[in-house]
Length: 279
Ligand code: C2E
Ligand code: CA
Ligand code: CA
Ligand code: CA
Image (cartoon, rainbow, N blue to C red):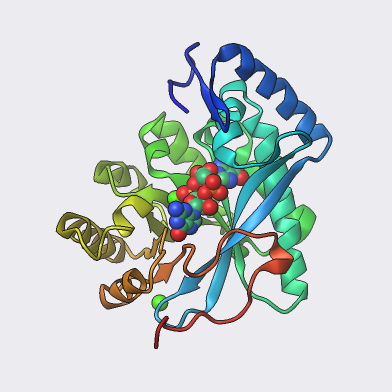
């Protein structure tokens, strides 16, 4: 996916190549039907505590069960959803389904929270905090069992509005997480005075900690920064036991990645505690 929001040069990348705005409109129309026909599904990826490896939350990651093209990852259709505004009903669907699934695993005896990714477009729409409050009430979910992940770059947008909306959401008792953190430390200043429950280090830094001194320096300073702000810090994209152990030594609080578990429908999530690999 390339191009800027609000411009006509949006393209999407599909398995078959790069499509231009015509096909992009097709995706948009199909996505509208997908929402009506309930073709979206959520897969969940566990997030574990370090160093004991206990599962503490599941992150909801949306997929589209396309009748002809099979299971599509979000990178293929989210840009079209964001550009068209369909991200608003899509997020409502994701939130409702994630909170309902969360009730399911609570009933099965698990105390895992659920993390939901939120687009900056959602934060620009009036009434987002009311929607979250209504869905918490509708499903009877305790607010501390919900975490909303907002990408770091979102915090550089319409800053005042986003700040206000995030403050309203945090006031509900919902946890806020800054996703894909690593590039712009400055955006954190917009969150001063707000409780940030979690900072997630982008996987492109995490993957390289065992062999790249610069990535190591970045990850170490994000951990220190997060702790200085009273936030927990999560490393994403943990794929090897070596990285997992390095993160424990560096004082990282939580980890997520293919080493621990790939995203799957929730009844298939491995509830077992993930111990120190290779030990
Ligand atoms: P993200 O929030 O940073 O999620 C992590 C992505 O990295 C997921 O890709 C996950 O499957 C993948 N991943 C996890 N562990 C590993 C690993 O060890 N190695 C590698 N190579 N990849 C790993 P996915 O599911 O394709 O999602 C891509 C992005 O789409 C997400 O990035 C998130 O920004 C967005 N997204 C997904 N679901 C939603 C949603 O419901 N709403 C919104 N607004 N965005 C969503
Ligand atoms: Ca995320
Ligand atoms: Ca991320
Ligand atoms: Ca810990």
